[in-house]
Length: 268
Length: 288
Image: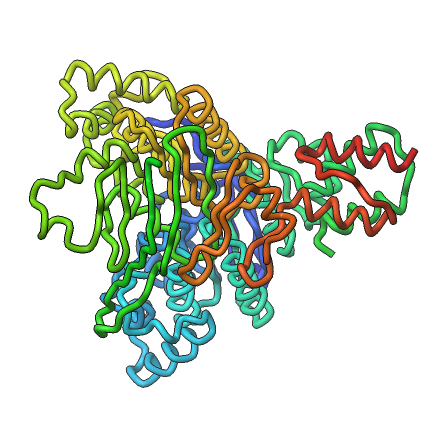
């Protein structure tokens, strides 16, 4: 079942050229899709269109059977949680616990449930000892973990991670990736917006965006196999893959080594 | 020494009145020229607190920081009205992690001019500096009249860096300047910092999580762990002797792959490659 369908989507900002052009994409329920592209490829714009923060010039977005328009936008937002790149832009609470509660309060969760979930999700992101602290005293990674706890606690069907790990340290990034795997395994549909192929390689499906157009949709294997598209995408390739390509060019015939580098690229 | 830390600690107080030690007993020297320093360590280890002491934005709870001969301690303002901290902020330019914090004017030009004017530079000179600084960060003059708020994240970063460069600081401190940028944007900025370091002979200090930056660019590495400075040395020393596990540091991709290939191919490479071309050549050598 498709939980998100995007048909013939076009968008441009006022007085700017086309940002997104002819986007067609379906996302199945429970799927983890990464949208991979450079800064300026239109990938964050796409996520803002899906939650109705921006309005498309043309085309259709259907979320869980509802066509996005002025009447449905609030119902659709209840289905989608979004974690942004910069955690400072999403802080509203005086303390960490207020902040985690905010989304749930908007969804009118009962008070006892809110309290229970603050406890559960703050522990899950290892921030339970910080509940009474002010968010501005936290480091960037800690703030992002709080933001994620607030979104997870809302229990939405879909969560978008819009470059949510790009400002974190390696440990913080790996932790967030682990949460993503965990919630995805529990049936939540996940969209990760990223420029990091290392991160995208974990998802079920990769969508490569370049200059507002979809260059390729495929499994990580299909994408890594498509050397021509990868070169055209200008994305930073994974190091083992780069080495593999160079060895191929030098006509080195070592299938064992090639396979090893291929598996490393796929993070196996 | 341009900046000297002597047994510096800093505590902050939370809403629940508990004190938290952000940096603990730091002793450190930084030269005025010639250093390209990366400051690494996991989030919450005290990196940002440490650098904010370098231009007196924060003052030690214990110990003393000396910046260009001016001693900064807990009660420096209370005890000595004559101590002027503003000139230090011109000498040590700090670019915060999130450029949105530093951009506020209507146009890019006025934003870049703000810093120098604040330090007494005339309007005409500030305009000239704005043009030069914008060029130095790789943006053309067409950006001068644009609103900083309509720029992309990478462009905002460049403009905020230009604003600091226009103040002509001796030491440039950047708090995670490349975080959130894609690899091409990251590389372009690091190239820029290298040029500033080499051509203008300034000390550059970069907070980063990217071990590839440390491996490829730094002349000196500082590692913070749980509020303490646990390492101060060269990248080579770090990769040979560093306690990566307990400091929660990642091995750079290049070193990681090189070591995996040694195991896979049953060989020992006698040096570490800097580029993939390097590694490719090393592999060809052992395969032939």
